Length: 126
Image 1 (tube, helix red, strand yellow):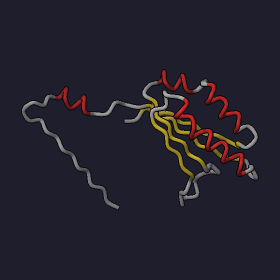
Image 2: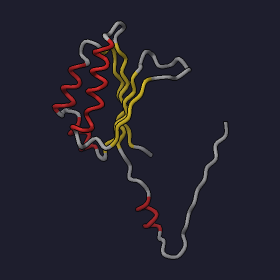
Image 3: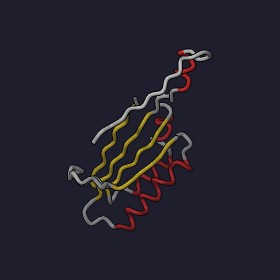
Image 4: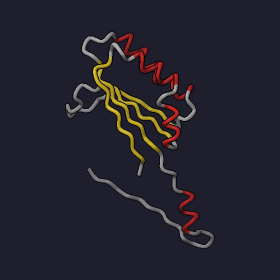
């Protein structure tokens, strides 16, 4: 496997270092959530939880980005975690609104009988 890094820098007339900084995307707060469902969990209940999580960005405007998917790693290191959700926030304040938000709390209640484990990692992108 090889990687190619392409960089284009123009420090010509009319461009200052400050202009370059403005073009750089701002840091964003990433919120990664992994779910491991109980063995024998009802597939309909899992689907209901998936749909409820996917509906949160429309209900909570502080969520600036959202994607999710099912594990398909061939490495066998998932430790039973099957679902990965990746949310983006612009600030810790936005995340602080999201966490206790009534729609997020209602979603969490759907997981009570079917969730075996959850792993959450938050980080500022670099």
